[in-house]
Length: 307
Image (cartoon, rainbow, N blue to C red):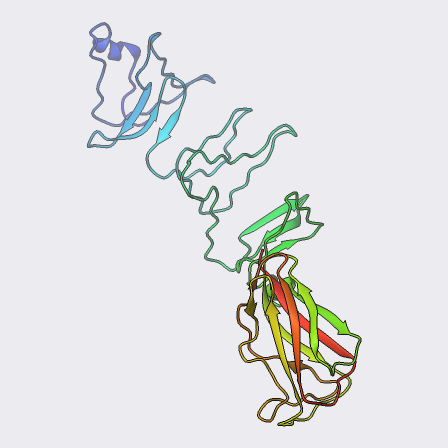
């Protein structure tokens, strides 16, 4: 031991005076036997901290209170393990981990619980990574079961069970190759069995729920050439909302668009495309004079669910 040894007699000056002892040079406890080398015992009515470590300005850097709570104001560089010995490890403030942070359950009854006690609009857990590895990986016996990649893609290796009533898929990439908006797009087909020559109306769609119309058109087995005298006019009306779906209802009149057999005849730009449940759409065909009939008409309507 460097320096002179200090005996209990040398510390007796402060005993019974209530003033204690102040050391102005560094001290070392050099044990001479296998026993506790330093004990700080609180008073029977202790309410103040039992141990306080201060800097030269008198600012508390670390304290131990009468309940055994340790408060460290600076950064703790823990080279070993933290063991809760059956109790709880509570972090009431921010915890920054520079290396690997591993929590191992001592028994089947132990669990890792993250409790968000803040009632504000803040995230319970934030994983912020500047690297290229996964943000989060949940393993079972060392095998990844759920992974959140750096780009935000989520991979689940087993079946995914949803206990709620619906899964909302936003219009962004699911796996980098398939756009989720396509999953919400539906196409319905209505076949008009009769020869379309005399005109008339036909119901073609009833909205199953909130949705947006994307396109409407038809395919027929017979074509119709442009004709300024004998031609068809097509329109699609929302009977429920009493408005037209087509911006410029197509026609086979001169200046319009001819119908080619076995080729999709698109009705063009749509308007009033937002539908609600049970909206009824009707195809209205107007015949001018005597155009050649069109047979085997298949109406094709594409929509995207929004609710």
